[in-house]
Amino acid sequence: MESFESDPEVLRELVRATMPFGQFRGEPLYRLPEAYLVWMSRQGLPRGKLGRQLALILEIKHNGLLGLLEPIIEQEAEATELDD
Image (cartoon, rainbow, N blue to C red; front, top):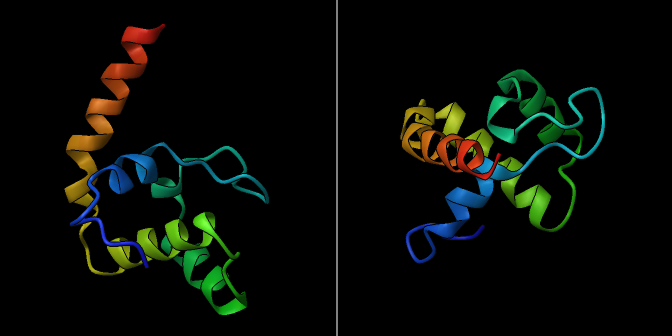
């Protein structure tokens, strides 16, 4: 798994990432229900970057650390508003 200690951009990319398929298509990964993430991990996460991001967001949610993403989520929302 990627280390976000050495690359803080990993968390920014995680906040920006959306689900590309399935019933939650288009939904930001951090908004996916934990139960869905657990189910996906049992089925087998996709390979590559998406799989690593899903594993990371599951780990964050499982350990109750979603609040750590809040400042990044707010920054991204502000940046999006400025772009509009």
